[in-house]
Amino acid sequence: MNIRKDISLLPYNTFGIDVKTKFFAEYNSVEELKELLQSDVVKSNPFFHIGGGSNLLFLSNFDGIILHSKINSIEVVEEDMLSVLLRVGSGVNWDKFVAYCVERNYYGIENLSLIPGEVGASAIQNIGAYGMEVKDTIKKVDFIDIETLKPKTFSNKECNYSYRKSIFKEELKGKVVITHVYFLLKKEPVYVLDYAHLKNAVLKNGEINLANVRKTVIEIRESKLPDPNDLGNAGSFFMNPIIPKSHYEELLRSYPAMPHYPVSETAVKVPAGWLIEQCDLKGKQFEKVAIYEKQALVIVNLGGATGEDIATVASLVQMTVKKRFGIDLVPEVNFIEKISPLSDS
Ligand code: EPU
Image (cartoon, rainbow, N blue to C red; front, side):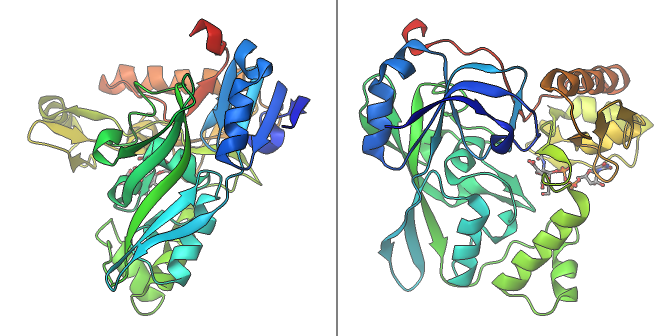
């Protein structure tokens, strides 16, 4: 068990926030994770588990222990002519996993190419892009109950998935650690190309095949979203709000061109990026923080910003959108400040 002290979190958060954690530990197996969870350091300090750090905003130094999975296995559990069931370690880099599947002609996650982060977090966050959500391929999830140290498995249904949500972000938040995710992928061609102009973009690159879909999605993402290696960011800062249909219809009278996606008979999802752009915030700079010029849903660290600087700009965006549209924007990014020690929870 290797618990390190006073570690910089700069390599562990894509916002590029220069903070430290008092303790930091990585584990390679479920056994090592259990050992860590029983250690005095974990039991007596605030505790937080990170993935690729692509959805986090550290507001201060972290006065506790941060855990990170290095469970990096990919196993074929079952396979037939039509599908394959893979058991994937929580520490596997998400995009490497997508590349692995595309190379082997496994269908179902290619539209999720280049999303930063790791497999464990993908199952917490229900990552989604270009008409696909990871929940549609997750068969089940293995995790360790932090209090009892017992391994458990939840079926897809028990994970309670919806847009960017799961039981792991709600009732089970801070109570379990995901160790493996099972993905059921198809071996015969099924493409999801109806998002905006994705199909046309793929056809421009050649024929419709898995490698080409992946290539096209990567090109689109690279053209719209900043590379965290150049500009600190955490992708979409806010979730796209889901509003009552009556509110949407009222707004439509003033904004007939407002993009929207029906969610149910009574609710409509509207793109937060569009709302922010309407408020003339796109491309605006606030000292070391800016609203990204090519995608208003992304907040960027221009260099040297603190977590508080970014949080201040985020709340300005929220207030402006609320005032103009009467809509509350909810961050997709997790704000990390103080988290209770296990013994207090
Ligand atoms: N839009 C604007 N101005 C902007 C940005 C967007 O008017 O500055 C409009 C677009 O014109 C379009 C609509 O908003 O009509 C949707 O834009 P886009 O296709 O870029 O997607 P998004 O809704 O802004 C979501 C996800 C992204 C994902 C894309 C593509 C959320 C919170 N974000 O963004 O996910 O890549 O769709 O599927 O659902 C992430 O979660 O970090 C992320 C990048």
